[in-house]
Image (tube, rainbow, N blue to C red; front, side, top):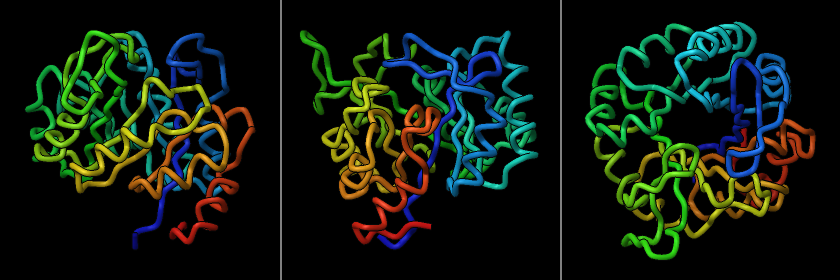
Length: 256
């Protein structure tokens, strides 16, 4: 791996505040997004990801405001996702200060959205966010992993590995792979899922869901992730970006 590994704090934003729960439930307040973003910029984060976790029309204006205020304060790339349904939504987020935009549910409903956004703005702008879980009893896919919607609560029956591969073919410049089983558990990334997706996609792959200790991050990189994303361990001061980078650097992987 010649490109430096990226360490990305993720801010789940609801009504203008950062929140965090386990498996997207039991959300608790984790602070002001602009203040947290400024802190992570100072700590040496390579990027920031903002996810509007409710993405209702009522919070849409709030999210644009948060993005604009954050972009004024920090100088690292911002990826913003949640409720993005059209190229016009992407355009507005880019104008507000986002560098990349994540799509998820809308792309599942209409995969052409991926190619439309990539064609208009460039593949480097588009992140396909894949919320995936191990197939529950009674269901199965070829890979054993399925795509979910609605914060991991609704199964789609779509093979998560096949969907990631298709998204890359349609023009997604990056895959954000979030394990819904591991999300918020702090038990470590789902390396099996990560390896399965890595075997099928050549675009950058971001590992998400399950980070709880510094020793969880290097295996994700060794499994094929180009970047690692975490939320609560950073928000509540359990780990710093620097500690994670040191752990990855100790394995010989290039880090900024």
